[in-house]
Length: 543
Image 1 (tube, rainbow, N blue to C red):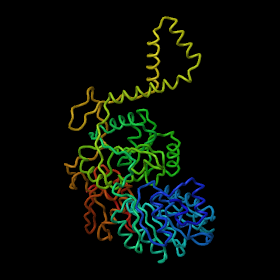
Image 2: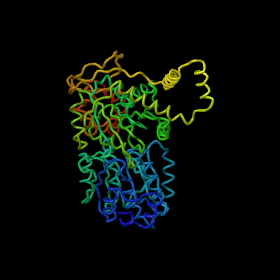
Image 3: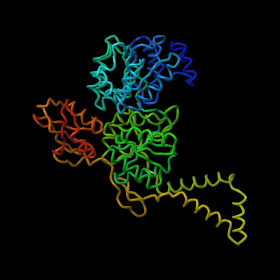
Image 4: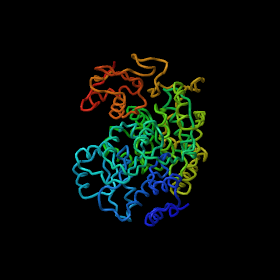
C-alpha cells in the first residue's frame, strides 16, 4: 500500500513523498482510512510507530482550503516536549495548506500565547493544564474544533490530568471527531473512551507482544547493592551507541549519572528539576552524542523523541508495569534494532511477572558477563582500534619504533608497551567483583558496598503501612471534600511519580493516610505544602 491508496489529498501524498515516506506504517494504514471516514477511533500502538502522521494527515485532509479561520484541530499531549514535536510535525505535514500551528504549554509566557491566538491559529497542540487556564480566561475559543486528538492518553492520566481533560471536553462541540492514541489501554483510558467517544473504531497493531518484536529483551538477577557494577559490565560488553538508564526516583537518576561519570562514562541525568532550557541543552548533547547515557525517571523521559537509542537499561523495574512498555518503546525505533535489559533483584521477582504480563511476552533471564568477559571485550576493542590506526601511523611513528629496536629493544616488548600505554590512556575503571543472588561470590576482593537503589524488601513493614510502603498523613480529609482520585492525582502530579505506585488510601474527616513506596517517600515529602485539593494547599508528613 502507498499513501495515495489511503485516499488522502494529493498535496499530502506529495508531502509524504517529499519527506521520504515510502509506505504507510501499520498504524497509519489502519487508522487513516477510519479517520477519513469520519469515525471516532482508538489507536493502540507502541511509541515510535508513526502515530503522529496517522492522526495528523486525516485532520489536515479535512482542513484543505479552510485554513485561516478559527481553531479547527486540537491535539492534547502529556508533556511540553511532545507538544512541540507534534506541532512541528503538523506544521511540516500541512505546509501545502499554509496551516498555522501553535504549541500551548506551561513554562511559556501567557501573553505571547494569547497574542498568537488572537492573530489566528488553525491547529493547537497543547498540554491539558495550560489549555484549561486559557479556556478559563476566555483566551481561546474551542467552539469550532472539528477534530480532537489525545496523544499518549495513558500518560496524561498517569500524570493526573483527568479533571483537566473533563473540563476541556466540556468546552468542545458535541459534533466533533475524536481520536484517542495510547500505547496501553489502562482502565482510566477505557472510561474516557466510553464517556467521550461515539462508537469508536478500535485499531490495534500490538498483537499480543506490546513491545517491538525487533527489540531484544533480557533480565539479569542481581542484588540491589550490585546494580551499578552489573550495569558497568553490561555497558562494557554490549555494543552501546547511546542508552537510556531508567531508575525510580530523581535522586536515583542524579546519583547514577554521577557514579557513571566518575567511572569515565559520558552520562547525565534528565529530571523534572531541570529548567526547560537546561533540559533542552541536555537533550541536544544526547542527540549529538556528546552525552552517551541519559539517566532518567519515567516522568522525566516523557515526550522524548530520540531515534538513535540503541539500549534501554531498567536499572530499577518500574512500579507501574505499564511503564515498562513505554520504556522499551524508546529503543528499536525508525526501523533500527534495539536492546532492553533489566536488572532484577530477588525482591523484584513478583514485579517482573507483572511486567511480563503487561508486555505480553516473557523476558528471558541471562547470565551477567564475568570480569573475564569484560576484560576480553576490552582487549578485543583495543586491538581493533590499534589495527585501525595502522593506516594513520606516520613515518615519525615508525622511526620511533626503529630507534628503540636499534637500541636493542625487543619489537614484541615495544608493541606490548605501546598497548599498555594505550590501555592506560583509556582510563577504564577496574571491573569490581560482585556476588550474584543465590550464588557464590565472584573470585577476587569485595568492593565497599555502594548505595542500594533496589526496591525495598517486601517482607518488612514500615511505620504502619503495607509491606514495603511508608504511611504518610495529609492534613485534609472528607471535611475538605478529598476523594481517593484527588489524592492520587495530587501526589502523582506534584511529586512526579506514577499514581499506580501508591498503596492504600484511608480518608478520615480531617486527615488522609496514604501508603507510599519506601523509595519514593523522600520525593513525596519534599512536596509538602504544594499538594492542592481544589483551592486548598495541604501538608504531608509521616504518619
